[in-house]
Amino acid sequence: MTRSDAGEIKDCQVLVIGGGPAGSTVSTLLSKRGFKVTLLEREHFPRYHIGESLSISCFRAMEVLGVKDKVESHGFQRKNGSYYAWGEEEWDLPFSHLPGEDNHSWQVIRSEFDEILLNHARSEGVEVHEGVSVKEVHFEDGRAAAASWVRGGDDPASGVVRFDIVVDASGRNGVLAARQLNTRRFHDVFRNLAVWGYWEDTPDLDLGPEGAIAVFSREAGWLWAIPLHDGTVSIGLVTGKEEYRAAYDRLGSREAVYHEAIEACPQLAALTKPGRLTSQVKSETDYSYVSDAFTGPGYFLIGDAAAFLDPLLSTGVHLATFSGMLAAATISSILRGDIPEDECRAFFQTSYRQAYERLLLLVSVFYESSRGSASHFYQAQLLTRKERQGLRLHDAFLNIVAGTEDLVDVTTEGAYQALSAKIRGEDGGSPAPISNHNTHKERLPESPELAIDGLYLTLEPELGLRRAAPGR
Image: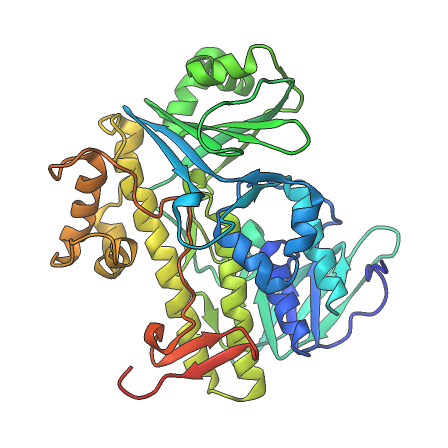
């Protein structure tokens, strides 16, 4: 396959910054519809990335992109559900219980998965340049209009590319929100630290549905185990920064903190005892943030460039592909002149924000459901009153339980408490997981009945936004 890593970077209709799942999604969908799309990626793929467990919504996203067969044939570990040993409870969460057929996802090696998506974008006509960094987005009369870029390596170059619309899919790097606009803020909650590594020669973790991610809560956090198709298992620890610092001071190294946490979990201790750690122990912290706005004149933020919650519910690739599809439909309507740009951007902001806030609520109440919730770690995960201000918690709550529960007549503040009580077993029933936990099979606003601000999204036969009939 011809790689567009060198040569002139020409002006385009849509400039996409970043070639991860978010950038590949939006660029593929727009290019398939005939728009001139250029994607600039600062690294050369394949490149390492954490986030191997994909929620079931990603299956549908791969279908929309036309890349499902490529992902399926690659041989990734099929994921048929999840397993949670959470507090005193054990939950098997098979995807087979969901409506529809062939409900599964994958546990992926992200370097391989992301390269499949980026190469698929190339095959659909996207002009991809790897090893090219965007240094600054330039605004003219308040609107994003051009970007300065630089390429290093054996063919150094720099220049400016002009565009009609730019999509920032630059991940944690956050070209716009973090570096230029200063609109990224970190949550009062989820200020944690993750430590992980990869193991070989381990026995099968015989818990939950086939290929499930396994999660185990502990007094000061939780651990994950993810089986991968190359025979390795990703095992990680999530804990509070204060708890980590205390353990580090006591034990003297990151590796010692990691191994102690595994040894304290009987299931993972049995898994790793005959195995061997074959990677460095990696870590990441302060990963939970959100931008004040996901769009502005001439620009859109998607995926991790816009927001990241917490690894607990495997939301990263879900939000990346979800926001990529939303952005592609919104930008299509703008470029075709179907609907005024301010209305399109309002639709994108509201749709993306609602999806994000549902997950924010879900993660927080899931943490609160732990039987170890009296510990400092779990108390630190709960949404504060400040965090709840401005959130549409009532709507988020109803979206989670709509059609499955009779808890409709609740107040905005009461919604959060009612859902927490339900999954803690304090509503008169036994503790139970939220019905759609870890599936994120939430619906795109694809019908007049789901219209937002009078608009709804269409993917086929035409990608874009449509107006619902008056009264919808």
